[in-house]
Image (tube, rainbow, N blue to C red; front, side):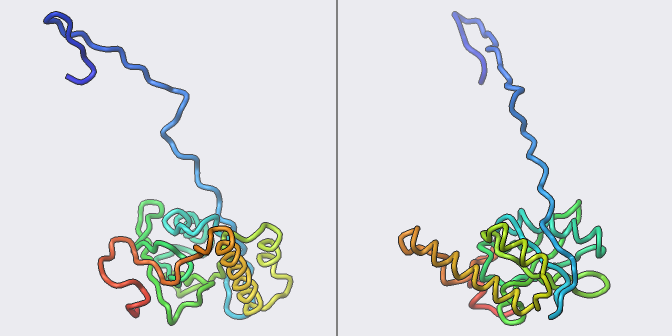
Length: 191
């Protein structure tokens, strides 16, 4: 029997120590870093995620947007900047579908599906410094294409820094496969 010892034909239970100083609960998710000021060029807002982990970032984002815009039913991303693309994420006990497109989706935008239509949100790369992200989120009258170009420049600089510091091992040149996929990568399929 596990947790027991035998001593000359007798079985004795061993004491169990429980460390109550550690908690099995996770820290509550941090609020989404989001600006919902409509911008020229069809942007309905700007989002600055903390990581490129969609399974961690999308529930917080869709919950925050659901409070303002209504229930988010789907999200479409470009696979170029997300290492793993789940088929769905769980938000407050319901499922939000996640899709991807290399042709119809701008790499720096998320398209959110809602019962009353769709909304486009610019994504600031998570590695962006706080000052640059604050400028992009504030907008300061900057047109959407200029914001997207700034996000492109940030991504390019981050890629160059990774190349230099990781011995030439920057971001992979091919898009990732969705979770559970056994088929070709998103670059090989069209959606």
